[in-house]
Image (cartoon, rainbow, N blue to C red; front, top):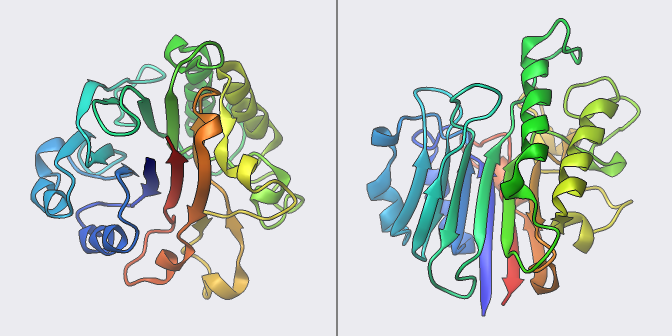
Amino acid sequence: MPLTIATWNINSVRLRIDTVARFVEAYRPDVLCLQETKCMDGQFPLADVKKMGFDHVAIHGQKGYHGVAVLSRYGLADIDRKGFFGKQDARHVAVTLADGPAAGARIHNFYVPAGGDEPDPAINEKFAHKLGFLDEMEAWEALRVGAGSSRAILVGDLNIAPLEHDVWSSKQLRNVVSHTPLERQRLTEVAKTGGWVDMMRELTPEPEKLYTWWSYRAADWAAANKGRRLDHVWLSPALAPAMRGCQIARETRGWDKPSDHVPVIATLDL
């Protein structure tokens, strides 16, 4: 049976709940992982997502900032929310699928800090936070999935485009936060240490360009097409043989009141 899991930085779930409903109607994911929900747990639009068919929800929110959620048509167990770098920012939630074709699989939903504008941790606290967050991801035993039969999926807005063709111009963005050599190296090390497989690039290798984010600052985002791949789907080696397809829902960037990110939909044949 196939399992479809989507990841999307929605940039305020309450502001864009109609957009979420439109996407769900079009793509019918089994699991939808959202980032930057920007609301406290008690303000999350549960009634709306239940109307979409998501009877099982895990939320980690905070007022006005950050926030992650997992919406599922299947049961959820072992819900965990972890803070990183000495902060309690709502940037992570993990669940285990209790039933369905991927029963027992662990899903980690992440929203890695953006890092501010200056790529120097000595003068930019936000960039130091980002690097420290990545350090703790790499050190966390729960994200070591490379050995054995662990069935795990890591998704989210990781706020780094690690490869040359994950951005419109690697040369011009070399010193821009999200594509600096240091960030690219650190995210690659997190994946390598954990033993993760980059599903999007396994199915669509370089040099093909892949983007999931287009800036609001562009007068015509589609014509300029200056995108970056900031949103990711990683699999444990035990799940990698189930890879069937990975789709970027680019058209959602042109919908009314869009997020600057678009959903990525991964399909596993289990």
